[in-house]
Length: 607
Image 1: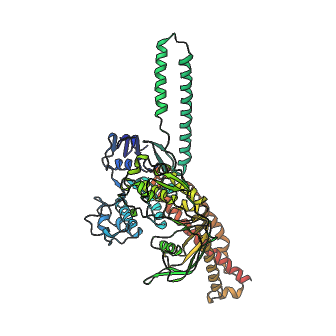
Image 2: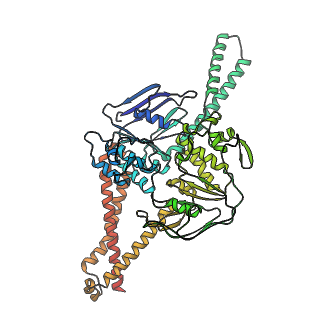
Image 3: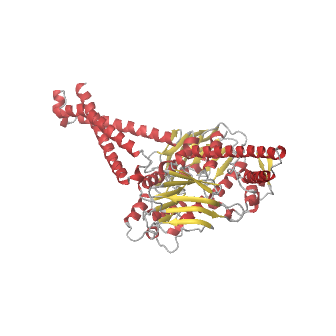
Protein backbone atom coordinates (compact mmCIF):
# COMPACT_ATOMS: atom_id res chain seq x y z
CA UNK A 1 0.00 0.00 0.00
CA UNK A 2 1.34 3.44 -0.95
CA UNK A 3 2.02 5.82 1.97
CA UNK A 4 -0.61 8.55 2.42
CA UNK A 5 0.09 11.97 0.97
CA UNK A 6 -2.48 13.50 3.33
CA UNK A 7 -3.75 12.27 6.69
CA UNK A 8 -6.12 13.86 9.18
CA UNK A 9 -6.57 12.07 12.49
CA UNK A 10 -8.84 12.72 15.48
CA UNK A 11 -9.90 16.18 14.23
CA UNK A 12 -11.99 18.21 16.66
CA UNK A 13 -13.76 21.48 15.89
CA UNK A 14 -16.65 23.20 17.64
CA UNK A 15 -18.33 26.56 17.24
CA UNK A 16 -20.07 26.21 20.61
CA UNK A 17 -22.68 23.63 21.53
CA UNK A 18 -22.51 20.24 19.82
CA UNK A 19 -19.08 19.74 18.17
CA UNK A 20 -19.11 19.89 14.38
CA UNK A 21 -16.18 17.46 14.14
CA UNK A 22 -15.35 15.10 16.99
CA UNK A 23 -12.61 12.62 16.14
CA UNK A 24 -13.04 12.83 12.37
CA UNK A 25 -10.31 11.57 10.07
CA UNK A 26 -9.38 11.48 6.38
CA UNK A 27 -6.57 9.67 4.57
CA UNK A 28 -5.65 10.27 0.92
CA UNK A 29 -3.30 8.02 -1.04
CA UNK A 30 -2.12 8.32 -4.68
CA UNK A 31 -4.89 7.21 -7.04
CA UNK A 32 -7.70 7.76 -4.52
CA UNK A 33 -10.99 9.13 -5.83
CA UNK A 34 -12.81 9.82 -2.58
CA UNK A 35 -16.35 11.13 -2.37
CA UNK A 36 -17.06 12.86 0.94
CA UNK A 37 -20.74 12.43 1.84
CA UNK A 38 -22.98 13.42 4.74
CA UNK A 39 -25.96 15.52 5.69
CA UNK A 40 -26.05 19.29 5.10
CA UNK A 41 -24.26 20.87 8.05
CA UNK A 42 -22.31 17.70 8.94
CA UNK A 43 -18.98 19.47 8.34
CA UNK A 44 -17.97 18.12 4.90
CA UNK A 45 -16.74 21.46 3.54
CA UNK A 46 -15.09 22.31 6.87
CA UNK A 47 -13.17 19.01 6.92
CA UNK A 48 -12.07 19.60 3.33
CA UNK A 49 -10.88 23.12 4.21
CA UNK A 50 -8.91 21.74 7.17
CA UNK A 51 -7.28 19.24 4.79
CA UNK A 52 -6.45 22.06 2.36
CA UNK A 53 -4.95 24.19 5.15
CA UNK A 54 -7.63 26.90 4.94
CA UNK A 55 -9.16 26.23 8.38
CA UNK A 56 -7.34 25.20 11.55
CA UNK A 57 -8.74 22.44 13.75
CA UNK A 58 -8.91 22.97 17.51
CA UNK A 59 -7.20 19.64 18.08
CA UNK A 60 -6.05 16.59 16.14
CA UNK A 61 -3.18 15.72 13.81
CA UNK A 62 -2.78 16.92 10.22
CA UNK A 63 -0.06 15.43 7.99
CA UNK A 64 0.61 16.70 4.48
CA UNK A 65 3.50 15.26 2.48
CA UNK A 66 6.09 18.05 2.21
CA UNK A 67 6.29 17.80 -1.59
CA UNK A 68 2.55 17.31 -2.20
CA UNK A 69 0.59 20.00 -4.03
CA UNK A 70 -3.05 20.58 -3.09
CA UNK A 71 -5.67 22.64 -4.93
CA UNK A 72 -9.09 23.48 -3.50
CA UNK A 73 -12.08 24.58 -5.58
CA UNK A 74 -13.46 27.75 -4.02
CA UNK A 75 -17.23 28.26 -3.93
CA UNK A 76 -16.80 32.04 -4.23
CA UNK A 77 -13.58 32.73 -6.23
CA UNK A 78 -11.70 35.95 -5.54
CA UNK A 79 -11.00 37.64 -8.89
CA UNK A 80 -9.50 40.81 -7.38
CA UNK A 81 -6.42 41.96 -9.27
CA UNK A 82 -7.05 39.90 -12.43
CA UNK A 83 -7.94 41.61 -15.69
CA UNK A 84 -9.00 38.47 -17.57
CA UNK A 85 -10.08 34.92 -16.83
CA UNK A 86 -6.89 33.69 -18.56
CA UNK A 87 -4.61 35.55 -16.11
CA UNK A 88 -6.73 34.35 -13.17
CA UNK A 89 -6.48 30.70 -14.26
CA UNK A 90 -2.75 30.92 -15.07
CA UNK A 91 -2.08 32.28 -11.56
CA UNK A 92 -2.82 28.78 -10.25
CA UNK A 93 0.12 27.24 -12.15
CA UNK A 94 3.32 26.32 -10.38
CA UNK A 95 6.93 26.14 -11.61
CA UNK A 96 7.20 23.68 -14.47
CA UNK A 97 3.44 23.44 -15.10
CA UNK A 98 2.28 23.51 -18.71
CA UNK A 99 0.51 26.83 -19.48
CA UNK A 100 -1.26 25.16 -22.44
CA UNK A 101 -3.35 23.23 -19.89
CA UNK A 102 -5.12 26.48 -19.01
CA UNK A 103 -6.05 27.16 -22.65
CA UNK A 104 -7.19 23.54 -23.10
CA UNK A 105 -9.38 23.58 -19.98
CA UNK A 106 -10.91 27.00 -20.66
CA UNK A 107 -11.81 25.95 -24.20
CA UNK A 108 -13.56 22.77 -23.02
CA UNK A 109 -15.28 24.69 -20.22
CA UNK A 110 -16.75 27.14 -22.73
CA UNK A 111 -14.57 30.18 -21.92
CA UNK A 112 -12.23 32.14 -24.20
CA UNK A 113 -10.02 33.47 -21.42
CA UNK A 114 -10.63 37.08 -22.48
CA UNK A 115 -13.71 37.50 -20.24
CA UNK A 116 -13.74 40.16 -17.51
CA UNK A 117 -13.71 38.18 -14.22
CA UNK A 118 -15.89 40.79 -12.52
CA UNK A 119 -18.71 40.28 -15.03
CA UNK A 120 -18.99 36.50 -14.94
CA UNK A 121 -22.22 34.67 -14.16
CA UNK A 122 -22.26 32.07 -11.37
CA UNK A 123 -21.73 29.26 -13.85
CA UNK A 124 -18.89 31.04 -15.65
CA UNK A 125 -17.16 31.80 -12.32
CA UNK A 126 -17.36 28.11 -11.40
CA UNK A 127 -15.80 27.14 -14.77
CA UNK A 128 -12.97 29.64 -14.35
CA UNK A 129 -12.26 28.31 -10.84
CA UNK A 130 -12.24 24.73 -12.18
CA UNK A 131 -9.68 25.66 -14.84
CA UNK A 132 -7.45 27.29 -12.21
CA UNK A 133 -7.37 24.29 -9.84
CA UNK A 134 -7.21 21.58 -12.52
CA UNK A 135 -4.52 23.12 -14.73
CA UNK A 136 -1.53 22.30 -12.46
CA UNK A 137 -2.65 18.64 -12.12
CA UNK A 138 -1.87 18.73 -8.37
CA UNK A 139 -1.19 15.69 -6.22
CA UNK A 140 -4.57 16.23 -4.50
CA UNK A 141 -7.53 17.97 -6.12
CA UNK A 142 -10.33 18.96 -3.72
CA UNK A 143 -13.63 19.82 -5.40
CA UNK A 144 -16.60 21.11 -3.39
CA UNK A 145 -19.79 20.83 -5.48
CA UNK A 146 -17.94 21.09 -8.84
CA UNK A 147 -21.07 20.38 -10.93
CA UNK A 148 -23.20 23.24 -9.54
CA UNK A 149 -24.25 25.57 -12.38
CA UNK A 150 -22.65 23.32 -15.02
CA UNK A 151 -24.73 21.97 -17.91
CA UNK A 152 -24.90 18.28 -18.79
CA UNK A 153 -22.33 18.27 -21.64
CA UNK A 154 -19.81 19.99 -19.37
CA UNK A 155 -20.55 17.62 -16.46
CA UNK A 156 -19.99 14.61 -18.72
CA UNK A 157 -16.75 16.13 -20.05
CA UNK A 158 -15.62 16.79 -16.44
CA UNK A 159 -16.31 13.15 -15.52
CA UNK A 160 -14.03 11.95 -18.32
CA UNK A 161 -11.34 14.49 -17.44
CA UNK A 162 -11.32 13.51 -13.75
CA UNK A 163 -11.18 9.80 -14.60
CA UNK A 164 -8.01 10.48 -16.63
CA UNK A 165 -6.26 12.81 -14.19
CA UNK A 166 -3.23 11.66 -12.23
CA UNK A 167 -4.38 13.71 -9.23
CA UNK A 168 -5.94 12.08 -6.19
CA UNK A 169 -9.48 13.42 -5.75
CA UNK A 170 -11.63 14.43 -2.79
CA UNK A 171 -15.15 15.30 -3.97
CA UNK A 172 -18.30 16.73 -2.43
CA UNK A 173 -21.32 16.60 -4.74
CA UNK A 174 -25.09 16.11 -4.70
CA UNK A 175 -24.96 14.54 -8.18
CA UNK A 176 -25.32 10.76 -7.67
CA UNK A 177 -24.45 9.83 -11.26
CA UNK A 178 -21.31 11.99 -11.16
CA UNK A 179 -20.10 10.38 -7.91
CA UNK A 180 -20.87 6.87 -9.16
CA UNK A 181 -18.76 7.41 -12.29
CA UNK A 182 -15.78 9.13 -10.67
CA UNK A 183 -15.31 7.74 -7.12
CA UNK A 184 -13.55 4.56 -5.96
CA UNK A 185 -13.84 5.21 -2.20
CA UNK A 186 -16.42 6.82 0.08
CA UNK A 187 -15.94 8.71 3.35
CA UNK A 188 -19.15 9.19 5.32
CA UNK A 189 -19.12 12.12 7.75
CA UNK A 190 -21.78 11.44 10.36
CA UNK A 191 -22.28 13.02 13.81
CA UNK A 192 -18.77 14.42 13.88
CA UNK A 193 -16.90 11.23 12.96
CA UNK A 194 -15.83 9.76 9.61
CA UNK A 195 -16.23 6.19 8.34
CA UNK A 196 -14.51 4.94 5.19
CA UNK A 197 -15.72 2.45 2.58
CA UNK A 198 -13.12 1.39 0.00
CA UNK A 199 -15.74 1.25 -2.74
CA UNK A 200 -17.38 3.90 -4.90
CA UNK A 201 -20.56 5.82 -4.16
CA UNK A 202 -22.81 3.27 -5.87
CA UNK A 203 -22.27 1.01 -2.81
CA UNK A 204 -22.67 3.75 -0.19
CA UNK A 205 -26.38 3.72 0.58
CA UNK A 206 -26.60 -0.06 1.17
CA UNK A 207 -23.50 0.13 3.41
CA UNK A 208 -24.85 3.15 5.34
CA UNK A 209 -28.12 1.32 6.05
CA UNK A 210 -26.20 -1.72 7.31
CA UNK A 211 -24.12 0.47 9.65
CA UNK A 212 -27.19 2.21 11.08
CA UNK A 213 -29.02 -1.09 11.56
CA UNK A 214 -26.03 -2.55 13.42
CA UNK A 215 -25.84 0.58 15.57
CA UNK A 216 -29.53 0.36 16.41
CA UNK A 217 -29.09 -3.30 17.37
CA UNK A 218 -26.17 -2.42 19.67
CA UNK A 219 -28.29 0.24 21.39
CA UNK A 220 -31.08 -2.28 21.84
CA UNK A 221 -28.63 -4.77 23.41
CA UNK A 222 -27.27 -2.05 25.70
CA UNK A 223 -30.80 -1.20 26.85
CA UNK A 224 -31.47 -4.85 27.67
CA UNK A 225 -28.15 -5.12 29.56
CA UNK A 226 -29.11 -2.07 31.65
CA UNK A 227 -32.45 -3.71 32.49
CA UNK A 228 -30.65 -6.88 33.64
CA UNK A 229 -28.18 -4.94 35.80
CA UNK A 230 -30.94 -2.90 37.40
CA UNK A 231 -32.82 -6.13 38.23
CA UNK A 232 -29.65 -7.69 39.74
CA UNK A 233 -28.96 -4.64 41.89
CA UNK A 234 -32.49 -4.56 43.22
CA UNK A 235 -32.99 -8.27 43.86
CA UNK A 236 -29.53 -9.87 43.86
CA UNK A 237 -27.47 -11.06 46.83
CA UNK A 238 -26.01 -8.05 48.70
CA UNK A 239 -23.41 -9.82 50.84
CA UNK A 240 -20.50 -9.02 48.47
CA UNK A 241 -20.78 -5.28 48.78
CA UNK A 242 -17.57 -4.40 46.89
CA UNK A 243 -18.76 -6.32 43.86
CA UNK A 244 -22.13 -4.60 44.11
CA UNK A 245 -20.44 -1.19 44.14
CA UNK A 246 -18.40 -2.09 41.09
CA UNK A 247 -21.46 -3.28 39.21
CA UNK A 248 -23.29 -0.13 40.29
CA UNK A 249 -20.47 1.91 38.73
CA UNK A 250 -20.71 -0.16 35.54
CA UNK A 251 -24.44 0.48 35.46
CA UNK A 252 -23.93 4.23 35.78
CA UNK A 253 -21.43 4.06 32.89
CA UNK A 254 -23.85 2.07 30.70
CA UNK A 255 -26.65 4.51 31.46
CA UNK A 256 -24.42 7.45 30.50
CA UNK A 257 -23.48 5.76 27.21
CA UNK A 258 -27.11 4.94 26.47
CA UNK A 259 -28.38 8.44 27.20
CA UNK A 260 -25.45 10.11 25.50
CA UNK A 261 -25.86 8.19 22.27
CA UNK A 262 -26.75 10.58 19.51
CA UNK A 263 -28.66 8.86 16.74
CA UNK A 264 -28.42 9.82 13.07
CA UNK A 265 -29.85 13.18 12.06
CA UNK A 266 -33.54 12.92 11.26
CA UNK A 267 -35.00 13.16 7.80
CA UNK A 268 -36.95 16.05 6.40
CA UNK A 269 -40.66 15.51 7.06
CA UNK A 270 -42.70 17.46 4.54
CA UNK A 271 -45.42 17.31 1.91
CA UNK A 272 -46.49 19.84 -0.67
CA UNK A 273 -49.58 21.89 0.15
CA UNK A 274 -51.77 21.10 -2.83
CA UNK A 275 -54.40 23.51 -4.15
CA UNK A 276 -57.69 22.59 -5.81
CA UNK A 277 -57.35 20.46 -8.91
CA UNK A 278 -56.44 22.33 -12.07
CA UNK A 279 -58.15 21.79 -15.43
CA UNK A 280 -57.20 18.68 -17.35
CA UNK A 281 -55.25 20.71 -19.94
CA UNK A 282 -52.64 22.73 -18.05
CA UNK A 283 -50.63 24.34 -20.89
CA UNK A 284 -51.14 24.38 -24.63
CA UNK A 285 -48.40 25.93 -26.77
CA UNK A 286 -48.94 26.23 -30.51
CA UNK A 287 -45.94 26.97 -32.78
CA UNK A 288 -44.28 29.35 -30.30
CA UNK A 289 -40.93 30.89 -31.22
CA UNK A 290 -38.43 33.40 -29.82
CA UNK A 291 -35.45 35.21 -31.30
CA UNK A 292 -32.87 37.48 -29.71
CA UNK A 293 -31.35 39.69 -32.40
CA UNK A 294 -30.23 37.23 -35.10
CA UNK A 295 -30.16 34.15 -32.87
CA UNK A 296 -33.09 31.72 -32.75
CA UNK A 297 -33.73 30.55 -29.19
CA UNK A 298 -36.97 28.67 -29.86
CA UNK A 299 -38.08 27.81 -33.39
CA UNK A 300 -41.77 26.89 -33.85
CA UNK A 301 -42.48 24.50 -30.98
CA UNK A 302 -45.78 22.98 -29.90
CA UNK A 303 -46.60 21.21 -26.65
CA UNK A 304 -49.63 20.04 -24.69
CA UNK A 305 -49.16 19.63 -20.93
CA UNK A 306 -51.85 17.63 -19.13
CA UNK A 307 -52.61 17.47 -15.42
CA UNK A 308 -50.22 15.02 -13.74
CA UNK A 309 -47.44 15.38 -16.34
CA UNK A 310 -43.89 15.73 -14.98
CA UNK A 311 -41.70 17.32 -17.65
CA UNK A 312 -37.92 17.80 -17.53
CA UNK A 313 -36.08 20.49 -19.51
CA UNK A 314 -32.42 19.76 -20.32
CA UNK A 315 -29.76 21.26 -22.55
CA UNK A 316 -26.46 23.18 -22.52
CA UNK A 317 -26.24 26.50 -20.73
CA UNK A 318 -27.43 29.21 -23.10
CA UNK A 319 -29.59 26.84 -25.14
CA UNK A 320 -32.75 28.66 -24.05
CA UNK A 321 -34.23 26.43 -21.32
CA UNK A 322 -35.25 29.36 -19.10
CA UNK A 323 -36.66 31.27 -22.07
CA UNK A 324 -38.78 28.30 -23.12
CA UNK A 325 -39.91 27.74 -19.53
CA UNK A 326 -40.97 31.38 -19.13
CA UNK A 327 -42.97 31.26 -22.36
CA UNK A 328 -44.73 28.05 -21.30
CA UNK A 329 -45.77 29.61 -17.96
CA UNK A 330 -46.89 32.91 -19.48
CA UNK A 331 -44.09 34.96 -17.92
CA UNK A 332 -42.64 35.79 -21.35
CA UNK A 333 -44.58 36.51 -24.55
CA UNK A 334 -43.41 34.55 -27.63
CA UNK A 335 -42.55 36.38 -30.85
CA UNK A 336 -45.01 34.13 -32.67
CA UNK A 337 -47.47 31.43 -31.73
CA UNK A 338 -49.91 31.14 -28.84
CA UNK A 339 -49.69 29.87 -25.26
CA UNK A 340 -52.93 29.00 -23.45
CA UNK A 341 -52.88 28.34 -19.70
CA UNK A 342 -55.45 26.04 -18.14
CA UNK A 343 -57.99 26.91 -15.48
CA UNK A 344 -57.55 27.09 -11.68
CA UNK A 345 -53.76 27.17 -11.88
CA UNK A 346 -51.87 27.79 -8.62
CA UNK A 347 -48.14 28.00 -9.42
CA UNK A 348 -45.31 27.49 -6.91
CA UNK A 349 -41.75 28.19 -8.04
CA UNK A 350 -38.37 27.13 -6.69
CA UNK A 351 -35.71 29.41 -8.20
CA UNK A 352 -32.09 28.30 -8.34
CA UNK A 353 -30.86 31.85 -7.64
CA UNK A 354 -30.13 31.68 -3.92
CA UNK A 355 -28.74 35.22 -4.18
CA UNK A 356 -32.32 36.48 -4.48
CA UNK A 357 -32.71 35.76 -0.76
CA UNK A 358 -32.36 38.79 1.51
CA UNK A 359 -29.30 37.90 3.64
CA UNK A 360 -30.48 40.09 6.53
CA UNK A 361 -33.96 38.54 6.70
CA UNK A 362 -34.58 35.99 9.47
CA UNK A 363 -35.81 32.46 8.81
CA UNK A 364 -39.11 33.18 10.59
CA UNK A 365 -39.76 36.37 8.60
CA UNK A 366 -38.95 34.63 5.30
CA UNK A 367 -41.25 31.66 5.92
CA UNK A 368 -44.22 33.71 7.17
CA UNK A 369 -43.72 36.76 4.89
CA UNK A 370 -43.51 38.81 8.08
CA UNK A 371 -47.03 37.86 9.22
CA UNK A 372 -46.41 36.83 12.82
CA UNK A 373 -45.06 33.45 13.92
CA UNK A 374 -47.58 31.07 12.33
CA UNK A 375 -48.27 29.93 8.80
CA UNK A 376 -51.00 27.92 7.11
CA UNK A 377 -49.83 24.49 5.86
CA UNK A 378 -52.33 22.10 4.28
CA UNK A 379 -55.19 24.01 5.92
CA UNK A 380 -53.61 23.81 9.39
CA UNK A 381 -52.07 26.65 11.38
CA UNK A 382 -48.46 25.74 12.25
CA UNK A 383 -46.05 27.61 14.49
CA UNK A 384 -43.02 28.53 12.43
CA UNK A 385 -40.61 26.82 14.89
CA UNK A 386 -42.46 23.50 14.54
CA UNK A 387 -42.58 23.80 10.75
CA UNK A 388 -38.85 24.63 10.63
CA UNK A 389 -38.15 21.46 12.64
CA UNK A 390 -39.71 19.41 9.81
CA UNK A 391 -36.87 20.70 7.64
CA UNK A 392 -34.14 19.96 10.24
CA UNK A 393 -33.79 23.54 11.51
CA UNK A 394 -33.40 24.02 15.27
CA UNK A 395 -35.88 26.19 17.23
CA UNK A 396 -33.05 28.57 18.21
CA UNK A 397 -32.54 29.37 14.50
CA UNK A 398 -35.91 31.10 14.29
CA UNK A 399 -34.22 34.53 14.56
CA UNK A 400 -31.11 33.56 12.60
CA UNK A 401 -30.34 35.78 9.57
CA UNK A 402 -30.29 33.95 6.24
CA UNK A 403 -26.70 35.12 5.67
CA UNK A 404 -25.56 32.68 8.40
CA UNK A 405 -26.93 29.61 6.59
CA UNK A 406 -24.89 27.20 4.46
CA UNK A 407 -25.78 26.62 0.80
CA UNK A 408 -27.60 23.40 1.70
CA UNK A 409 -29.57 25.09 4.48
CA UNK A 410 -30.63 27.87 2.12
CA UNK A 411 -31.84 25.26 -0.36
CA UNK A 412 -33.88 23.57 2.40
CA UNK A 413 -35.31 26.93 3.49
CA UNK A 414 -36.51 27.75 -0.04
CA UNK A 415 -37.95 24.24 -0.29
CA UNK A 416 -39.84 24.77 3.00
CA UNK A 417 -41.38 28.03 1.80
CA UNK A 418 -42.40 26.59 -1.57
CA UNK A 419 -44.05 23.56 0.02
CA UNK A 420 -46.13 25.69 2.38
CA UNK A 421 -47.86 27.49 -0.48
CA UNK A 422 -50.93 25.88 -2.12
CA UNK A 423 -50.10 24.78 -5.66
CA UNK A 424 -51.12 22.48 -8.49
CA UNK A 425 -48.25 23.41 -10.82
CA UNK A 426 -44.64 23.21 -9.59
CA UNK A 427 -41.91 25.06 -11.50
CA UNK A 428 -38.51 23.84 -10.28
CA UNK A 429 -35.34 25.47 -11.62
CA UNK A 430 -32.27 23.42 -10.64
CA UNK A 431 -33.95 22.17 -7.45
CA UNK A 432 -31.18 19.70 -6.55
CA UNK A 433 -28.36 22.24 -6.08
CA UNK A 434 -26.75 21.98 -2.61
CA UNK A 435 -29.23 19.41 -1.28
CA UNK A 436 -27.87 16.37 0.57
CA UNK A 437 -28.72 12.85 -0.58
CA UNK A 438 -31.47 12.30 2.00
CA UNK A 439 -33.26 15.57 1.16
CA UNK A 440 -32.88 14.74 -2.53
CA UNK A 441 -34.62 11.45 -1.85
CA UNK A 442 -37.50 13.30 -0.20
CA UNK A 443 -37.78 15.82 -3.07
CA UNK A 444 -37.76 12.93 -5.53
CA UNK A 445 -40.65 11.26 -3.68
CA UNK A 446 -42.58 14.54 -3.56
CA UNK A 447 -42.19 15.19 -7.28
CA UNK A 448 -42.98 11.59 -8.24
CA UNK A 449 -46.09 11.49 -6.04
CA UNK A 450 -47.36 15.02 -6.68
CA UNK A 451 -50.98 15.04 -7.87
CA UNK A 452 -50.51 18.25 -9.81
CA UNK A 453 -48.17 19.05 -12.70
CA UNK A 454 -44.40 19.55 -12.57
CA UNK A 455 -42.03 21.28 -14.98
CA UNK A 456 -38.40 21.21 -13.91
CA UNK A 457 -35.04 22.31 -15.27
CA UNK A 458 -32.18 20.12 -14.08
CA UNK A 459 -28.72 18.86 -14.94
CA UNK A 460 -29.05 15.98 -12.45
CA UNK A 461 -29.41 12.88 -14.64
CA UNK A 462 -30.31 10.53 -11.80
CA UNK A 463 -33.01 12.91 -10.49
CA UNK A 464 -34.51 13.25 -13.98
CA UNK A 465 -34.57 9.48 -14.49
CA UNK A 466 -36.39 8.99 -11.17
CA UNK A 467 -39.03 11.70 -11.55
CA UNK A 468 -40.05 12.92 -15.02
CA UNK A 469 -42.48 11.34 -17.49
CA UNK A 470 -41.05 13.17 -20.50
CA UNK A 471 -37.94 15.18 -21.37
CA UNK A 472 -37.63 18.23 -23.63
CA UNK A 473 -34.16 18.72 -25.13
CA UNK A 474 -32.53 20.53 -28.06
CA UNK A 475 -32.82 18.62 -31.35
CA UNK A 476 -29.08 19.21 -31.90
CA UNK A 477 -27.45 18.74 -28.45
CA UNK A 478 -23.95 19.98 -29.32
CA UNK A 479 -25.04 23.07 -31.29
CA UNK A 480 -28.59 24.14 -30.29
CA UNK A 481 -30.34 25.90 -33.17
CA UNK A 482 -33.70 26.65 -31.53
CA UNK A 483 -35.37 23.34 -32.37
CA UNK A 484 -36.69 21.43 -29.33
CA UNK A 485 -37.95 17.85 -29.17
CA UNK A 486 -40.04 16.09 -26.50
CA UNK A 487 -38.96 12.52 -25.64
CA UNK A 488 -40.91 10.02 -23.54
CA UNK A 489 -39.32 9.12 -20.19
CA UNK A 490 -36.29 10.44 -18.33
CA UNK A 491 -32.77 11.43 -19.34
CA UNK A 492 -31.54 7.89 -20.05
CA UNK A 493 -34.68 7.17 -22.08
CA UNK A 494 -34.03 10.35 -24.08
CA UNK A 495 -30.46 9.26 -24.87
CA UNK A 496 -31.66 5.84 -26.02
CA UNK A 497 -34.33 7.35 -28.29
CA UNK A 498 -31.90 9.90 -29.66
CA UNK A 499 -29.33 7.17 -30.34
CA UNK A 500 -31.97 5.05 -32.06
CA UNK A 501 -33.00 7.96 -34.27
CA UNK A 502 -29.36 8.65 -35.17
CA UNK A 503 -28.76 5.00 -36.05
CA UNK A 504 -31.89 4.93 -38.23
CA UNK A 505 -30.73 8.09 -39.97
CA UNK A 506 -27.22 6.69 -40.54
CA UNK A 507 -28.69 3.43 -41.83
CA UNK A 508 -30.89 5.32 -44.30
CA UNK A 509 -27.92 7.42 -45.43
CA UNK A 510 -25.80 4.28 -45.96
CA UNK A 511 -28.57 2.67 -47.98
CA UNK A 512 -28.88 5.75 -50.14
CA UNK A 513 -25.11 5.92 -50.57
CA UNK A 514 -24.91 2.25 -51.52
CA UNK A 515 -27.73 2.66 -54.06
CA UNK A 516 -26.03 5.65 -55.65
CA UNK A 517 -22.69 3.83 -55.80
CA UNK A 518 -24.34 0.74 -57.29
CA UNK A 519 -25.75 2.85 -60.11
CA UNK A 520 -22.57 4.93 -60.66
CA UNK A 521 -20.07 4.26 -63.53
CA UNK A 522 -17.46 2.98 -61.06
CA UNK A 523 -19.47 -0.18 -60.47
CA UNK A 524 -20.76 -0.63 -64.04
CA UNK A 525 -18.34 -3.47 -64.88
CA UNK A 526 -19.49 -5.50 -61.88
CA UNK A 527 -23.13 -4.68 -62.63
CA UNK A 528 -22.73 -5.77 -66.21
CA UNK A 529 -21.41 -9.09 -65.06
CA UNK A 530 -24.10 -9.31 -62.39
CA UNK A 531 -21.60 -10.20 -59.65
CA UNK A 532 -19.14 -8.70 -57.21
CA UNK A 533 -15.42 -8.45 -57.93
CA UNK A 534 -13.11 -11.03 -56.30
CA UNK A 535 -11.85 -8.41 -53.82
CA UNK A 536 -15.41 -7.43 -52.86
CA UNK A 537 -16.48 -11.08 -52.41
CA UNK A 538 -13.42 -11.80 -50.26
CA UNK A 539 -14.16 -8.78 -48.05
CA UNK A 540 -17.84 -9.71 -47.73
CA UNK A 541 -16.97 -13.23 -46.59
CA UNK A 542 -14.15 -12.31 -44.18
CA UNK A 543 -15.41 -9.08 -42.62
CA UNK A 544 -17.84 -10.90 -40.22
CA UNK A 545 -14.91 -12.93 -38.81
CA UNK A 546 -12.80 -9.79 -38.38
CA UNK A 547 -15.73 -7.97 -36.73
CA UNK A 548 -16.23 -10.88 -34.30
CA UNK A 549 -12.53 -10.81 -33.41
CA UNK A 550 -12.65 -7.03 -32.86
CA UNK A 551 -15.71 -7.43 -30.62
CA UNK A 552 -13.89 -10.08 -28.57
CA UNK A 553 -10.82 -7.81 -28.25
CA UNK A 554 -13.06 -4.92 -27.12
CA UNK A 555 -14.82 -7.12 -24.53
CA UNK A 556 -11.47 -8.34 -23.17
CA UNK A 557 -10.16 -4.81 -22.67
CA UNK A 558 -13.43 -3.61 -21.15
CA UNK A 559 -13.27 -6.49 -18.66
CA UNK A 560 -9.72 -5.53 -17.62
CA UNK A 561 -10.65 -1.83 -17.27
CA UNK A 562 -13.67 -2.75 -15.11
CA UNK A 563 -11.25 -3.55 -12.28
CA UNK A 564 -11.70 -0.52 -9.94
CA UNK A 565 -8.12 -0.86 -8.66
CA UNK A 566 -6.41 -0.97 -12.07
CA UNK A 567 -5.87 2.78 -12.40
CA UNK A 568 -4.46 2.99 -8.87
CA UNK A 569 -2.12 0.02 -9.28
CA UNK A 570 -1.05 0.58 -12.90
CA UNK A 571 -2.17 3.87 -14.49
CA UNK A 572 0.09 3.22 -17.51
CA UNK A 573 -1.72 -0.01 -18.36
CA UNK A 574 -5.09 1.67 -17.81
CA UNK A 575 -4.25 4.49 -20.24
CA UNK A 576 -2.84 2.01 -22.82
CA UNK A 577 -6.00 -0.10 -22.66
CA UNK A 578 -8.17 3.01 -23.03
CA UNK A 579 -6.27 4.08 -26.18
CA UNK A 580 -6.45 0.56 -27.66
CA UNK A 581 -10.17 0.39 -26.88
CA UNK A 582 -10.84 3.62 -28.74
CA UNK A 583 -8.93 2.42 -31.82
CA UNK A 584 -10.70 -0.96 -31.81
CA UNK A 585 -14.11 0.69 -31.63
CA UNK A 586 -13.27 2.96 -34.56
CA UNK A 587 -11.96 -0.04 -36.52
CA UNK A 588 -15.12 -2.06 -35.78
CA UNK A 589 -17.35 0.82 -36.88
CA UNK A 590 -15.43 1.11 -40.16
CA UNK A 591 -15.73 -2.64 -40.83
CA UNK A 592 -19.47 -2.59 -40.08
CA UNK A 593 -20.01 0.26 -42.53
CA UNK A 594 -17.92 -1.47 -45.23
CA UNK A 595 -19.79 -4.79 -44.77
CA UNK A 596 -23.18 -3.06 -44.92
CA UNK A 597 -22.30 -1.26 -48.15
CA UNK A 598 -21.03 -4.48 -49.75
CA UNK A 599 -24.10 -6.46 -48.63
CA UNK A 600 -26.43 -3.82 -50.06
CA UNK A 601 -24.41 -3.81 -53.32
CA UNK A 602 -24.67 -7.61 -53.51
CA UNK A 603 -28.46 -7.45 -53.06
CA UNK A 604 -28.66 -4.75 -55.74
CA UNK A 605 -26.67 -6.82 -58.23
CA UNK A 606 -28.53 -10.04 -57.53
CA UNK A 607 -31.98 -8.44 -57.37
